[in-house]
Image 1: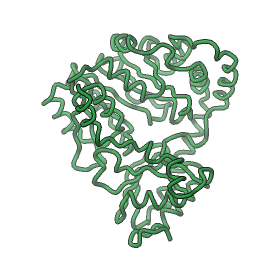
Image 2: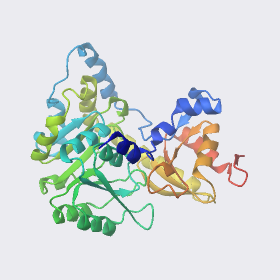
Image 3: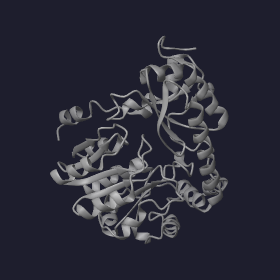
Length: 373
């Protein structure tokens, strides 16, 4: 593919991570970064396991060494957690890295890659960078997965790789395992990549499908519930033959030593996960209740601490800008393909005091005058 074709295929790509940069918004609105609250990126607001911090600290005395190229200890820990053979795991520096490497391994230039909009934009971006043709479908309701239309695309096109995000980013929708099971069985020549980045790690999700289907890969991460976004550890679980192909192109040492030991420690701290899960539920329930009577803001999707908000009479870009001027940073969800004709925001909740500030700012928005009261 020529550079001009690459430029044309990627020209409309919007990356919400860049648009919500604290540095950019602080400079734009004349604010101090220290006084801003970032609700735009989905991270664990309660930090990470104390055991993970201790493990990172201890590992710093060995940073002159390369990490274990096979990540054997992490592999065994995940094998025990998921009841899967150690040779079924593939690792990367966060799921962005995993997605890129899997597409390089499992798809060729010109192959078709299926996604359902709206969803995590990295699938389409990495597929296009690989030279693949992206086939996208969308339901009549913008925020709901349309299984029938998705399957019709599988019937019509020779799909090499199909992505399913569950819980979906940014809608929070959970796609039933039975739906994925049906698709994997009906279309054995398609590799189904099931992204469970947002799932509560204590839940099995669709991992059990790997035992039954050679064409299913499950993606998991330590960035969300585990609170290790800065460590960048993501992994895939799939049939050994698929993993062996992907490992040919995996750069050696692509997960650092501190990241690997932090992930192992985090896996063993079940109390931290339980406490975070309870806190996420408590805060999301409170947030929904506080906005339930708001005439212009409605919660249309949620999972964990992530919420998708629908604005009844405001432009999402205007509201995001108004909030940023008050030091509140949210993601304008119209940056997601499939939501560009909506008025939606994506927020990831924090602790009660910070969430109260977001609630108060949302309540004070006056759409008619495009101001914050």
